[in-house]
Image 1 (cartoon, one colour):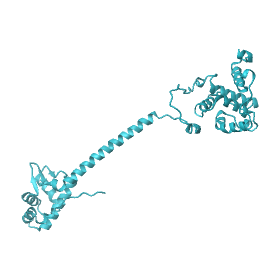
Image 2 (tube, rainbow, N blue to C red):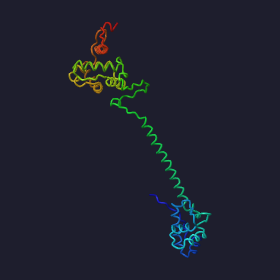
Image 3 (cartoon, helix red, strand yellow):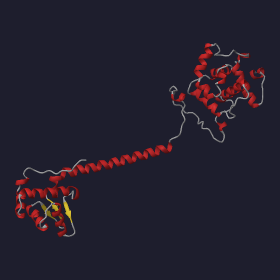
Image 4 (spheres, helix red, strand yellow):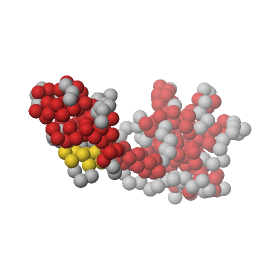
Length: 298
């Protein structure tokens, strides 16, 4: 805690005003100095401008004598301070003579401190307002581990694919690449075991496929081949039962497939790969139609 202080000059004990006030009150200069310092210290907090107002002079004089630790006649004490020049009389007040010389620096410091506190409060209030405003526009966005560590890509303007909770099919058409990959995975899983539980709504799987293509930079054709390969592998067909799991294990699947020489499936008729054929047939089954290969190519 910082304590207030006043400036006391070394000439005060022998100053003519000190000697005059002491003589009027018939006390020693040392005692007079003590009364003066008590008055000044009180004024630092109670009369910072050095002016003391009261509605009645008697009450005012008693107050001045009390805070100065004077236990004699209050009127005599005040008259002595006025006559010696320590106090100046105004119409309705008493003013400490040359008060600024004693406490001016402290008053300026206090004023500057009040201004700093005012600016700090305003700044804090503005910061709280900014936080509140930002909180109102913050969106809850779920970020996967792959998205956090995805390579930096240019900031492009793309359509808003926000999912409508009442019609989630709006996000991906059946013939979109993400949905085709989701359908392909579902068909391959059911081909291995028709009793496997798979979702009717493939929006989440298509969303993962879309992130896999956009953020992980996966090739859709390679992904389709790996889905087919994984579902024909004894180990992976029991573990890859969702697009999220497939996306997570993509690099491992790719390495194993390349090691075993099956990273690409053999081409079918007219250059169509097995994966392409499976994707086409899955889409056609969803639509209730199977088109002959020659009609597809024509």
